[in-house]
Image (cartoon, rainbow, N blue to C red; front, side, top):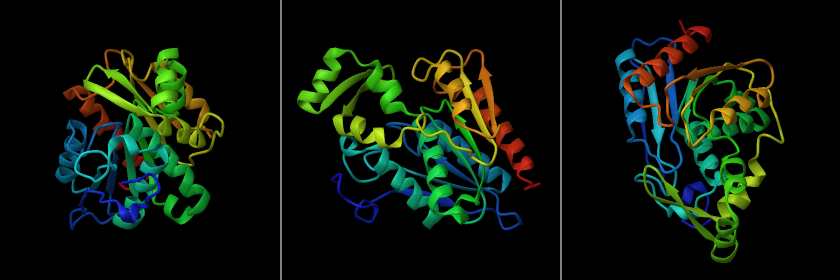
Amino acid sequence: MGRGETVSERRIAYRADPPAAGNGEGISLFWLSGYKSDMGSTKATELAAFAAANGYGCTRFDYSGHGISSGEFENGTIGSWLEEALTVFRTVTSGRQIVVGSSMGGYIALLMLRRLLAIAPEQAARIAGVVLIAPAWDMTEELMWKQFDQKARRDLEETGVFLLPSEYGEPYAISRALIEEGRSHLMGRRPFDPGRPVVILQGRFDTSVPISHSRALVSVLEGGWAEFVEIPDGDHRLSRPQDISLLFTKIDEMIVRANFK
């Protein structure tokens, strides 16, 4: 996959499970994975199982360069992954959705909502609420570029790639294109009103997305829609049984608030 390709030229893998026949409201969940994660992750599969057990629909997919979708990871940008999320949402899902995004997926969820509010309000209206797990909003600038030392910045400028150490395994290959293209999607410069409930789940001991960064998101989301939930002993992944249980509780609460039940 080249950076100039359109979504139609990429092979984006997805799984879409429809709501149960008796679900008159057609309640569905739309999952957005994190950076270098995929639809087979613990939270994604747990969410799909939760949806099936409750008769909800559930759609999940792999960004290009992730999981079983086509493309090279290093060629991806915030814009290309956002475009893929929008395409899957508009062409695969139907009815009202609760969007659930983890880490970078939380960022993509907000960008997707903001884009739809601007260009396709009828599609935005299908999003009844958003649940964010350690949302890495403005990550390319705030959590990457501004945190890089001079060597990292020099590597990016001279070679186009910086290998960022990861506590979860092999280093992440950060491309110069990811950083530069990401500057056209920064939310901190353009606060917006989401127009529906947004729940933010954040672990206090998260070293990838500091809790102060997630707290700051509340002021970027105008209109008083955001609920911030701090998990005192939580880390970045928030994939322990108690974390997953809290996620499901917040989804259930949001479904009630959205008048699904």
